[in-house]
Image (cartoon, rainbow, N blue to C red):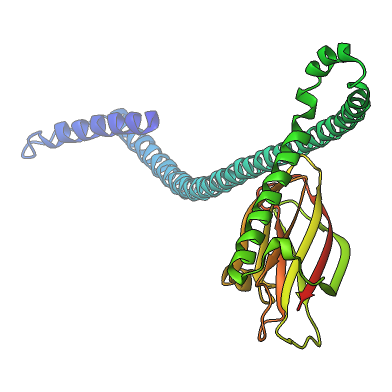
Length: 329
């Protein structure tokens, strides 16, 4: 740029000098010295050389400017590509961070679920241990209470000690009360049936004949039910009365089991829901016994006994039963 400015300055000076010389009167030319003419020629030559050099430099500068413009365009295109690559990389990084957070959340959720299951398992194990210890202590206390009760008639001083053990014997008292209640219900039912049939207790009656008997046991899981079907195969009714007698023990003795008797063969939950119940959801603690008439008929020689443990989600039940069907003429 400085070279162009110098060239323009020198060119303006040359024009001024030429203009001044052309402004002279041509009508009366004055002879110029040879030295001045030679100086003007040398000046013109220098100006022409500088003009050529300026043009050459201008061409070179234009070439450089064009190359720089192309280079700038290339750099701008490269910068745009790098920016696009950077945006893609940032987007991929965002997706990877989101997936990482989701993976961490899933891992934390799985860890919490595992911790909850471990805590639940530990709690169940603790409860099982406590139940086992309580059962052992209860058996020891019961054995001790039985031994003390045998000698209580001859030693009045043991009454004070027995009062401290009443709490340990409450479970057995509840089982005895339930058995007594069931026995009273059985007596009332039998007396009512005897009154309806016109049978007098003082006259006695014929002994019943056993046509079916079964003894066994079954395990009812926690939250489940267990059933047993009685089938009087090849039974021919001759006008006799049929009486169902049952007796069972439920272990653990301190837990409650619900006892049911249904007419017919009811093995599925749908059949049990639609069955005709003779005894329904009778709460039994420890065990029970009883008799029931009207379970079987000419066209119905089957019945179903059901023990429910649905109210307990931890402890199973063991049922030991004895069943018998008597025929009275």
